[in-house]
View 1 (tube, one colour):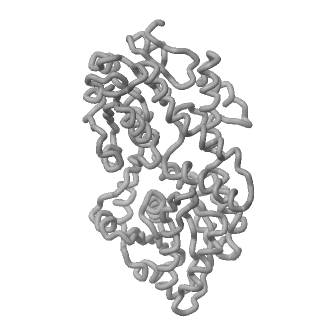
View 2 (view 1 turned 90 degrees about the vertical axis):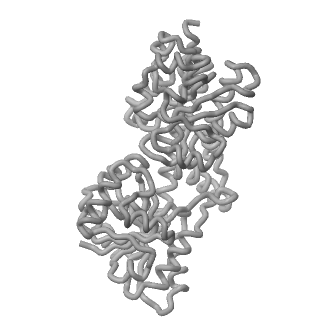
View 3 (view 1 turned 120 degrees about the vertical axis):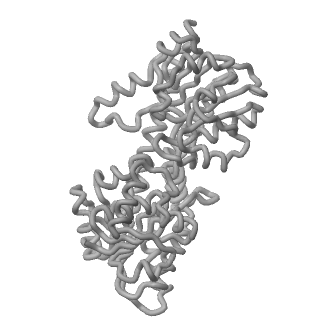
Length: 439
């Protein structure tokens, strides 16, 4: 058993802390926001992640997990401290490292014995050296420490599974002994452990996310071509996926990627390349295609409802950037809502868990209590998030409630022949034809 401190109680920090506690370690999670710590101590989890609340409750009850705002308290007996704070995009797409700096300074000022500092936040290449320099300069008196990079590869909505069943654990450090100790912490996960240097470990994270974002933009580019040529992108993706060099993952055409990782990480990698004199043309194309995917519903509705969308009523099914999370950061639905509102449309939305954060970002958005209330009087509905709930709707009830039975399926969750058979005017992404109720 190890004694671990985790700085940050967002998706990465809470999942990391809860999972290490579940593996039998003693974990203290730190956050500088008192309200979040009070909430966690009261048994409430500030984010939606399936299974996380139950895991936290179980480990708090067992005495393996606790929460504090006090770095000195958390580090008093710690062997290892994980930095799991946010690194949002800056003005030019660069990663904003202010929270990493604050965490490193707080660790330096309160550590009283040798520590391994593990950076789990997604940070630019070279940040490990920078963190080491900050700690060295900020210590009141010299205390030995080592810095290890251990990038996270968890997906929101399946973070607990991803932590406990990783494809690999990547560790980078100048201190081989420290890296081995962090490797031992991960041995119960029974997975590949990749040991490398600090900068390579940091780059693996960015390269991985950029590649996955590229796959999404690639299939959306193919979808746009399929619409012009009369092919079906879903069958194209299936045919591609049987090639072992390609595989089936991240080949779902739709409204593009969103969330807290892919958008900011592709931007940050582009920024790193630019400042080093490289020419990241592919990364720029990935971002351009992703922006175009979000404009597809606007262009399509103009065509179907007339050039003006003024006073047209449009409903959005889904607000989170993906199912099984309440995260609306960089969510396609919110950008689509803003574009529709700019064109004069009246926009309503429903999401099983993400309406509160969406309302904070877009106060003008009308919120419905369920999909059937959302459908009332709508000129069109856009499917923005592929929640399982939406796949099981009473579609005849939806159609009868709408003013015009227009469905834009931004996630391709319905079958075109079924939708047209029910009397919908149906458009999907890259399905090769216009499905206008038998037209």
